[in-house]
Length: 194
Image (cartoon, rainbow, N blue to C red):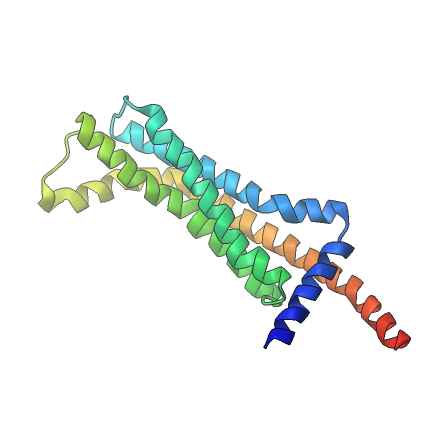
């Protein structure tokens, strides 16, 4: 009901007031660190595919989306599926938060840039005829073979993203618990005043 939502908004307001500036800074900027790593993964995947397919033209055209799209996607997904639910009180389980952080790091922060680089560079390879592309019947096998070495090179970056997502989720949950501890005494004082 509306009263339940109003209580959540009030809790969020109290959480915002009681958190220290240092913790607030961590809260605001942490997801951008994961998003920045995602951009680096996108640029690395783009570079590896360009080398594999011998693409020398249009470096800026392929690099720009590979830096911007993973950054925006990772920041938005982390905000929507971890930070916001956590601080609205919808995600109280620490293990759940940590698993979400790891999954966001792996899937959106690491695998997504790799998968995004594939069609970007495939279209450039076809456009500039930089690598001999097979017919439709062998296309899947060709891209599987072309992407395997790139994925092996990217696996360390994906692992870093998983660990970064887990670390940030753990930190966010710790800050959330500290803020809840700060709220409880103020609630007790309010009851005592009544």
